[in-house]
Length: 294
Image (tube, rainbow, N blue to C red):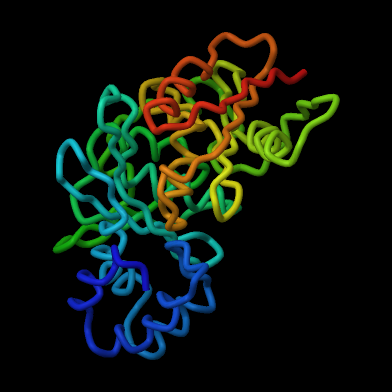
């Protein structure tokens, strides 16, 4: 079991500890549970999926990186497939606060990068801030998404975001987590660049059309991130943060980044390059490439 989970694990119920321990002990455990694993845990512990998501929140929060606030938030997203995806907030020392990732963003991006196509609910241990409510309003399941909080009955996102402004107000029909292919190409590429191109082609940027993706080479493999743009602009999640989130949840330190590639269109209204290069340099990665696609 990864060291970060050990303290939170001791506070789980005995039946859940027994059923969950073999899953957490796997070398490739990546802060998610498949639908089969969820069903197994619910059966073994005689609990509902919602109850399981609440029980897992301390383990999700254990993934948080909070050098600035020391305030750890965990989130668990339930996909249409029945799988559960953990999320946690991330902060970066020395970087502007706008570079941070909120736990709800983390869980949503995690599910999306694992190729989940829609979410049923997001369970979180603190009430979502306005930033996260707006971010989740971009989802293709926003109108039916349940927000689950300790001590409260589940409520739709619309309950927490009344009179919302979102993509449909701007006549946007392709929503976050829809399956898309932007069709950008490169004449040739290595494996890392190809992964970044694939991420860019599956990104969500209907407002700027600046579809972009990042791929990070770690010691254990490649981690990709897709840009997730928002109708309100500021809650947008950059592709680098999306990739760093996946890397962290997979259990690999950001210190392990060896190389990085950002792919984005040659002609676009905005560019992720400056912010991507700056944050990666702060994390110790100097081998960063900027590739422009057609």
